[in-house]
Image (cartoon, rainbow, N blue to C red; front, side, top):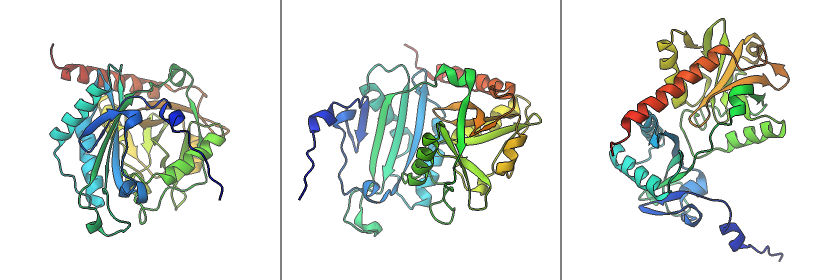
Length: 310
């Protein structure tokens, strides 16, 4: 039998920085472990939320928690703590991660540890993991030059199977789409649904601007209702910009004056090209950049107000 040697000293020296909370214990990131019989590892049974900080304060925490609990309910997954308790654990993990400029936070809740069975009774308690590490800031080149994305042939999950509205730990669909886009030199993968309509990207939601209006695929297209996506509707309304959901198809990409993607860590990233199709002028558009400026202003100002006084 052929055996492969594992150099654990090399693995442990990998650049895994930050701190991780696992079921009540906080350790340096490279020491964090979870049992192999955890059903999140075995079956992808679990949910997660990704947050980022501004002024070292998690942004839109309440909105993330509402979606977190909605995802858990759809999986019949117990959430045995309230939002305030979870926030305290997040803050403890942030403190343990050291003096980060700003932080990336991922909160994962799995079905828990149990026998090799799909029976809910096999897992008496869920597992909670909180990952905190330094935030990878959006490079300046994104605002200045925009990004290229790829319309990939991999379809978004059918809502009748693993419904995309659940922010599930089962990300194989997203990973395959993103890897396909990466092979084509793109930074994000745009996906269609089973009806051939545009749905969302592998890691973000998609918007186009046409005639001064923001258009984005509806929830019925089979997508995750992104927190940044939802907040952008509020931001656009306050800016006097019409924003609405509309069924979009690949041929609609040719009618776009601007396009951008939205996500917690990406904020609003201007899209200037989709495969070989140039969007608008081929530069980040004025509406996109105006909304990005408003978004950042709101994020920095509201979190600054939440920073405790010294």
